[in-house]
Image (tube, rainbow, N blue to C red):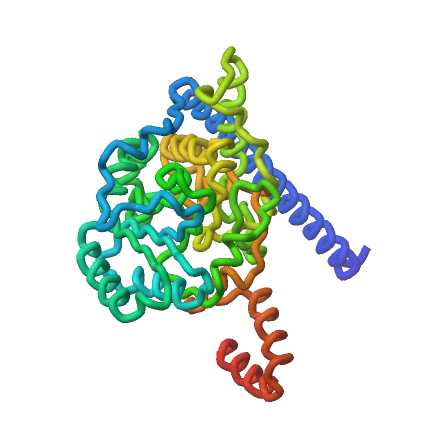
Length: 382
């Protein structure tokens, strides 16, 4: 056979050999990856079992909120069944007052009870802002604002909140301010404000444009809380699901093996929700106090926090207070209309699905938006 005739066959043989080597290398990488995942799963289950044996359950007794750490400028009026609450340890009182003022300015309620839990740095300024406002506008609305210090000390009585400080030097928690007890304050409000049938919690970076009386009267269908669903994000962004399931299974084995009944016993953990479940934002949450306490949701969140600490920060992929809130309440909340939490207006980045929804709405509302949209798309592509 001529040398030229053999060349195509040789080239083909070389290509086949290279392809076989590549397939072999790919298969080897997959095997290595599978082995790593298996070892990680075994490690997770061992740590989860170890944590489950050590974790103690601490129910929240009725007298916990009356232990004297919280001091208010005005005694909290226990007669109202609806309370608007904010909580922040930020030193600047102005954003806190903006949330309170905008709530009061847009409601038709004759009486509005507001409780502001703040740090010592902002308390004095906030009290002065509230007093000035009441002198000017007090005749138009019975606005009762209590500015309260000491919530952080009250929360530090909870073992889970003390355990969080063990992550102060962890590289997994980049923003150390997320370890502050104030970051978890919302989850304890149905206990601290146990007299109120319903509590509206607001982050202090909000401006309220709607009438909160609608939320005070809304039927939640027996759910313990209400929030706005956000399908631009899903649970797997926040949670390591194999690790979460390992901790849940270990807890279920521990709780299921105990002969205990009643409110003083640790509740069985809920089934882990699907990792593609839509999230819900914690910036505006409406709590149904009795249902929240009955389902012991604050205690469930605490247990997840302890698991997070024990995993050395590996259990949650993003955030500290949002992931346990999502896990504890997933698919067990009333969905508010999206207008009640229009979040992210100050962001410098918008996801493509969200942008398409914004653009479609703008095209319907503004006839000349198409030209503006083309210019925006050019700038974003540059």
